[in-house]
Length: 66
Image (cartoon, rainbow, N blue to C red; front, side):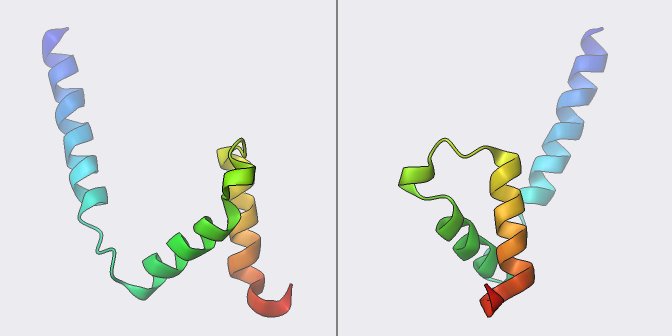
């Protein structure tokens, strides 16, 4: 049982390493953070993850057409 928990932790560490090595200076990443910053405001602090994701997707896919 202990070995299984240790292996799970190792897998999570590898996933974390891949996520945290994504360059944050790329244009698409900067654009995503900007959109999320516009969607998730202080007055919308109770906005759920799913709804925030949907609003961000709408904003990205429709751009200035809204």
